[in-house]
Amino acid sequence: MDRNPGAAEHPAADPDTTDPGAPEPGPAADRDTTDPDTTAPDTADPDTTAPDAAAPDTADPDTTDPADTAADRGTPVGRRVILGMLALGAGGMAAAPWLQRRLEKFLAVAAENDPTGVTGLLPNGGGFRYYSVTSSVPHKNAENYRLTVGGLVDKPADYRLADLRALPQHRIVHDVQCVTGWRVPQTPFEGVRLATLLDAAGVRPGAGAVRFTCFDGAYSESLTLEQARRDDVLVALRMRDEPLGHSHGGPVRLYVAPMYFYKSAKWLSGIEVTREVRPGYWEDRGYDVDGWVGKSNGRDDAPTT
Image (cartoon, rainbow, N blue to C red; front, side):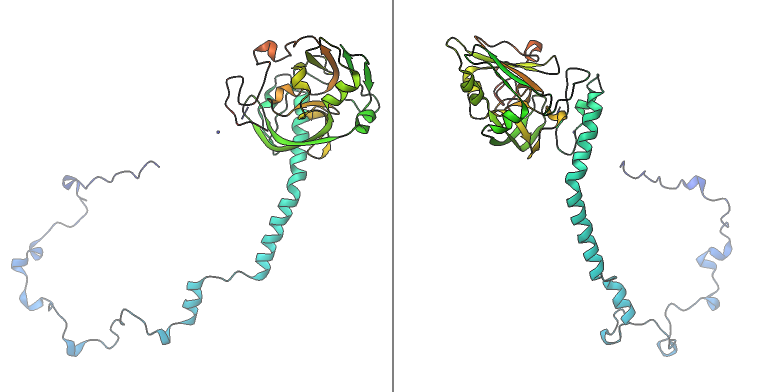
């Protein structure tokens, strides 16, 4: 939910507050009464100038103290220091991805146990924020995950994770844009095109939309049938070149590249072909059904395609 005072003035001294400890002027201070016999001459006799008089303003460059010259140049930086700094920089760059993933995992666990949603306001090194509309979400894996395809189709289907992995995979790299403002550039997703599953099921005449349900038990989304058949709409199994983790909606989520991220339902468990669009969880709460980036929800973000 993509953020001296000047120095004090010094008042002039008050003549009425002159230091009482200063000696009061006496007759010796009066120039008209100074004894001329004790007055110092205005200029020194050049013939009696002391031999150790002040040196000229500029020094002879041939006699400059070598120690002073070295001090002016500063302490040289050794080769070992430079190599050490380069090694530290390289070590920091190598550790950055590991540190980023550790931070993401920490925030993901915190979000699962945060019914207030406050953790969703906290960014992390990867740029994502974690949202869930329920207080907890069960974990699924290759053993217990199932995705059903049904509704107005000729051949309803039930896919295991291994079945989805065996189908042709497609990779899409686009920015991810949340309707709350944050954006994660150039994020890779991989998975099966939604159109592939719809074609395999055989969509019946009269169908006009697709509804998605999730195993958190609360979230839902919808697309028109035309939107669902786009090449940039995936049933995603991988994100950023890794299996899709639980905190990012894994093991399987919907990914709708050209729309705001709320349209990409996490923890996908059901695909139902319907006659018309049914508003999803956030559409029931005021979000636009057609969530095109930059063309909906009163926002003008740059497109993600």
